Amino acid sequence: MAKLSYKVSYYVLYLLIAAILVVLGLFYFGGNAKDGAVLIGVDPEMWQPAQTDTLLYLMYGLLGLAVVAMVGGFILQFGSALKDNPVKALKSLVGVILLAIVMVVAWSMGSGEPMAIPGYSGTDNVEFWLKVTDMFLYTIYFLLGATVLAMLFSSIKKKVS
Image 1 (cartoon, rainbow, N blue to C red):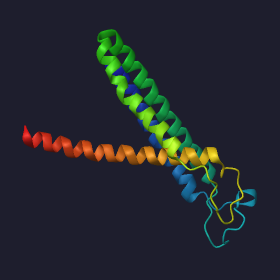
Image 2 (cartoon, rainbow, N blue to C red):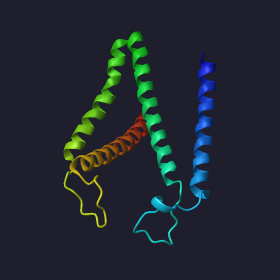
Image 3 (tube, one colour):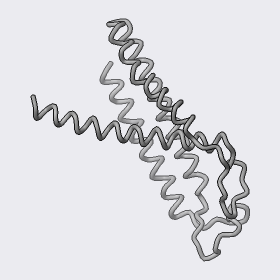
Image 4 (cartoon, rainbow, N blue to C red):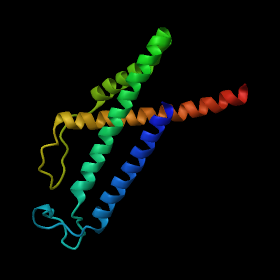
């Protein structure tokens, strides 16, 4: 069974790499944007690739695939651990609960005040998206700090032991 999952993941990896290379090739060598794809207000001398949307959709798809794989893997691992050792499985939820708490606190810390962006008249400069952006930034800062502290304490603990 492990061989089958290894083979499948091996082929999926190479399929994703091939898709990325094809889309990057289209992006870099696909020519300039024409007609409706040209951004108004941008210097006409600047290069505007024709396949920018394709690259963005690929990145959205890969991000979605990564999130689905992560959540699916977590659920499967938690389910198998719950059968083997329920107490240990429930203790593993502490990290997820702490992350959820950090995100709620970061959401409440986020500013919903609309930004003054010259030349922007889009619909995303609203309280909800501003707070979401701040939440993700604060969460990334917290996780980065926690990672650095874990590395420091781990090396100190290793030296002391």
